[in-house]
Length: 257
Image 1 (cartoon, one colour):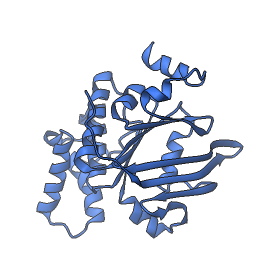
Image 2 (tube, one colour):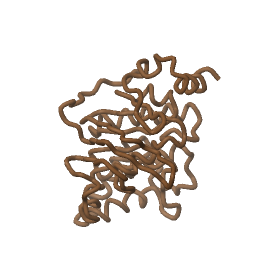
Image 3 (tube, helix red, strand yellow):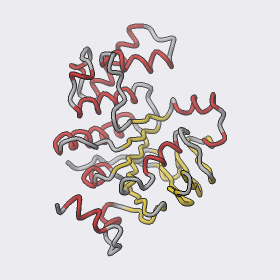
Image 4 (spheres, helix red, strand yellow):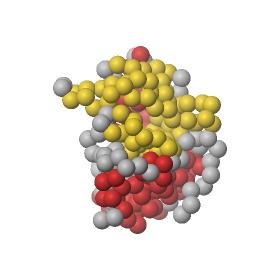
């Protein structure tokens, strides 16, 4: 399915990672990395497991602090914010976790109501119902509104997790391995949904993945983490038009096996 063209504002970087490094003990995960996400863009971050992809989005959302460098998100330097300021900024950032992070004891409706009621206390019951039904309809699961997470498939849980993130209407979406553990048909559905979210909700998104089919389908631009640095940037074809032995096996595993 061809990706719908969207208008990307290359004059406005909603995220700017500037000369950021991060280590855990003696292991340096990110080495003086620079990265920009532009308004309206789907940016894919590629890399093998353990290369620091998930660390990057945890730094962006303030869940981790960099050892050096700065991270500017929507005009705010994340690593300089106090806890109250950081919580306010996080309301504008949607974080789609790899495991969907649904509350098993709550219905789908209750899972979606929880962040809405917690952060927008003045809503009426009718407004809450309308918001929940709107995002569920947006991810194609309005019929599952009264089901429990245990009754959902892996792909449905991913969709509900994305819907719960969208209910606060974030400016930025951070997707952590959105197709991990899913069958090929469900992967296709999730990739389509990521593109639909970009268009309908006008989000700017970072998609962390090692799934090249996902990258090719959703990415407006791609960067690849190699040895703690962004060594390659561009379109899918530009990323893999190389004899770099660190890159070729990555492509071969995804498309030749």
